[in-house]
Amino acid sequence: MELSVSILSVKKENCIQTFYNLETAGVDYFHIDVMDGEFVENDTTKIMTEYTEYLNTITNIPLDVHLMVKDVMPYIKSYLIFEPRSITVHYEAAKNKEELLGWIQYIKEQNCKVGISIKPNTAVKEIFEFLPYIHTVLVMTVEPGKGGQKLIPETIAKIKELKKYLKENHLEVEIEADGGINENNANGLKEAGCDIVVAGTSIMNSDDYKEIVRKLKVKD
Image 1 (tube, rainbow, N blue to C red):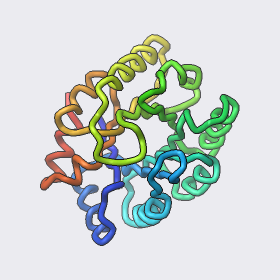
Image 2 (cartoon, helix red, strand yellow):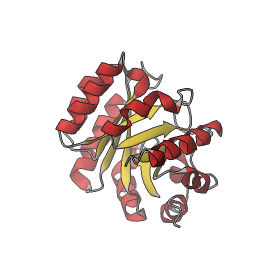
Image 3 (cartoon, rainbow, N blue to C red):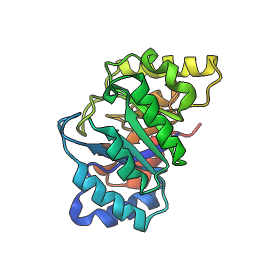
Image 4 (cartoon, helix red, strand yellow):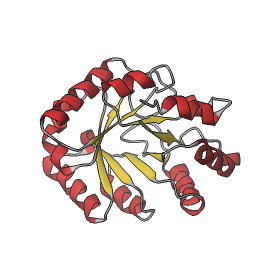
């Protein structure tokens, strides 16, 4: 299982050193949580742009951009500049199916992978029809908007349901989980079918990045 580190709780005063330490600890991706203060209550737009600019100049680790915003297209365009590995948009942010498919197509045309994220209360079957067109489903295991929350156990059933559907329909789509993930629940997420977990607080609060990263990546 791969690990995408959320940089939401990285302290600004020593962020460059922290990014370097995370890289040497063996994280697979840097997870960029872009929040506009409208789609979710927090606003991280300024700090995430700043951090992404730093990361772009100091690391080759791929960027995993998660847009929790109301006005999606301008953010897609502003983050494509950084050539991220993937950009994930929220299913709930689209006014209709056509708008969502428009974002998906636009991101793919720029040679970037695309993901759809769903909130804890959104049923996984809502996005089944979009799966043939995307690379990743990001299942929110907490309500999006702030770090440090506890994983909602019911979201694990959604991951299992999604994994089953992907297998039955022979679809190559990665499952990513985000929210409240730590060394105690990472194994359960892998067993449910996760390919990538996003963790922030559990890494930042650790004294040993390398050790916690190793535990979160759960080898077979």
